[in-house]
Image (cartoon, rainbow, N blue to C red; front, side, top):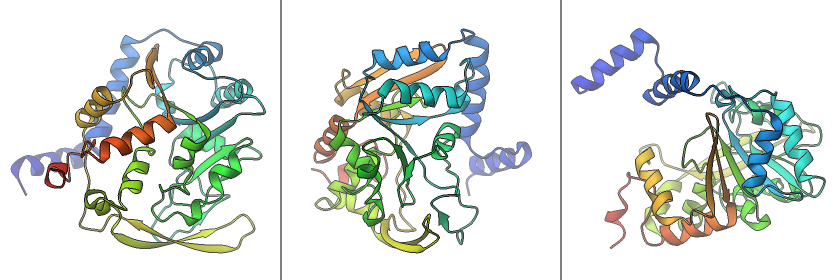
Length: 300
């Protein structure tokens, strides 16, 4: 182990730091609270979303960090209710709902297991009538397209393939909103391109080499199992903010990836269908957000 790694491990243990990313985020938030003082209400937040494409009848997917809503003068429920009111009875709202499991032996209970996708997603998960997909990368949805999004996820072979809610977002012209997650944050939908391309491209096949079996408890208390492909134990992929942002900034149409800021809160919005298809197109050329594995070894 290198000297720098040893020093970093000592610092982590001494100051109870889980990771550099979380440390940087913690102090960035502290600095933000000093710099950004302007508060905003629910109407202002919804108006921003409307300016980015939110409409009655919209199908919307939301990634969020409630910690970044510190200048918002409202509650989680007020925000969710406002979005649902704006999209109306013909619109569908969805959010990630991957489970929080205490240990490897825990069984994912579709009804009861909380999500690790943030406080907004967890509150939405508990809404009456919300559907939750059966997968370790579960999604919750409410609205006319909820069944379509969630009803085949247990048959996915990679969590992100054509049967997954993430891929299906492209089939219902969904808008993906991200709140407080960075300037060019995309989220799980990025892996849809990896999954689709893994069938024909060795580079992407590396991401899905190990077969795993997951067990789930359904709402009727019955159990089912799902076989899925995940990275092998000795394989790791990696990307930095710089490598990720470079691809989004240089190759994606800015009109399809909108970025605004309301006080401290970064709000991004992109078209799911455009993004998935563009990511697939770029992936075929070896243009990826990952720095490891190096695509140059596979694409000439």
